[in-house]
Length: 124
Image 1: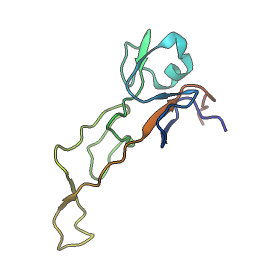
Image 2 (image 1 turned 180 degrees about the horizontal axis):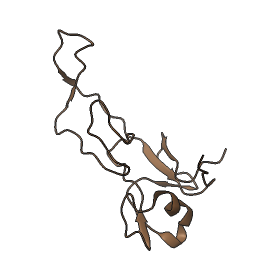
Image 3 (image 1 turned 60 degrees about the vertical axis):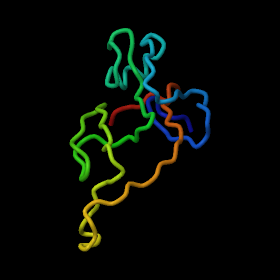
Image 4 (image 1 turned 180 degrees about the vertical axis):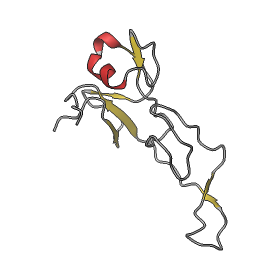
């Protein structure tokens, strides 16, 4: 099955498949990637006329836009800086006797990629 242009996937191998690009904030010319530009525009940077940028997911994890329980309200394309410590807010309802903060989980490095070829998605 062909991917949708602009679809982002996480890959567990160390190369970028054909028809995809790494999500590393690269600046691309609009004239060579018109379909992708039509979908994401300059949400992640670029001048919005001749260039645009891919999302930069190096050292980041994507989150949905809107309001979350432990993150601030985010807008489409907005980057949120992580906390500067290894603790995350815990849920006191899990165990009322536990501390409010708990250790953050570890990390596993993999490759986020965006489809630059495939099917142009239709709006419903």
